[in-house]
Image: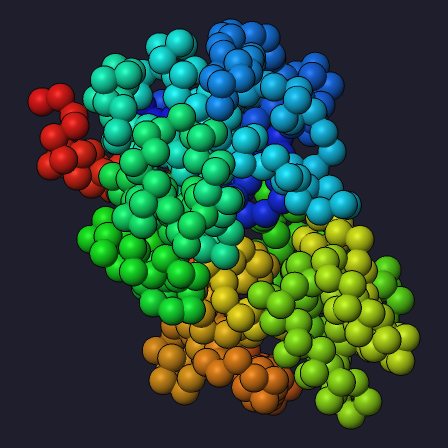
Length: 503
């Protein structure tokens, strides 16, 4: 199968979140399964720096050039093909300095870029033109998030414009419903589509242009990043206003949990760790990693004190209001160490800083993100907290399972799909991998964490069983890629039903 992906970010070129991991890693896994994959993304400063500053990366400049009519203005695009060493995927950078030669992907320290609608309308239009110009074989066009939401609309409504439209099916992946690409109505002219599509069934949302809605309405098949999140977004509040549309397309909506890259997140080979370990040697390995982390963070070196790790954006979504309240309750009265890594909202940073100043022997706070430190926290932590308000998929709980840090999570989205609560029944069945709670309250988080601490302190045999069950889980991209291939086949069937694919 020939698959082309369009994404606003992809590792190793540009990243702000999990979208980049998916768009950079899933194509590689699909190639390993015998398929052909290409990825288009904007030629941001970071992307060009990565491509041009590494001699091992091969760059073919301007393999195609084209002009996009953007509301009556001709805007040029240059397409550069990039080959990474030992990587079968073709990456294509859509270069337009006016739009992408700037600091930041979607905004900078002054806020979101005011021309984001034009930037990503241009990107989507350049991608569909480039596929035609380069004569890339294609069975599936796989689009990610609102930045590429126009591509399924072109694919569905302009079937006579490009030959590849009639030979392929479209798939739209929703990574987070909270980000929809909503712009004022007059920006419809930037899309180049018939204004008759600017109505509530397709592209219009309360007078605005909504690019995520556009992709959802027109794609042959839809995916999101966990089965539970696929159900949650079909109702309020997780649907963020589009629950009716998603519910109407529920037969074409599939939830697939993101995978993790075993070559990067592997405690047996991770170069960031003080000691390597596996499911048989985790006690000694994690003990060494814990000592090393405590020493480097200035925490007392205590093997007997539980170490709670937290890595994540300082944002409401991640449950920091619950975490801060729990820490205030426990800071003086419960002997627990906290290793916290995250950046984001200043108000949460200030609250956590006060707690770290109050008890530096119990709280370590780092607000400058460090990927090596994230690995070290996962390897050293006994418990990992992730009490998200909502979580489409989540990756840190998967890293925690891999590294033997038992997760305490709120049962929402991908957290509900990947962490099995350590009830007495689940422990007896040998399927418990963590601790979960339902209500979004600090009391519920406290109760779940106390359950974890009680077993950690008093039932080491059960604790070991939970750790090892978690480490035995398979959350690799190979598993996720196989599930995605099934969706691609379904998308092609749906496209045939819609009579757009040639027999």
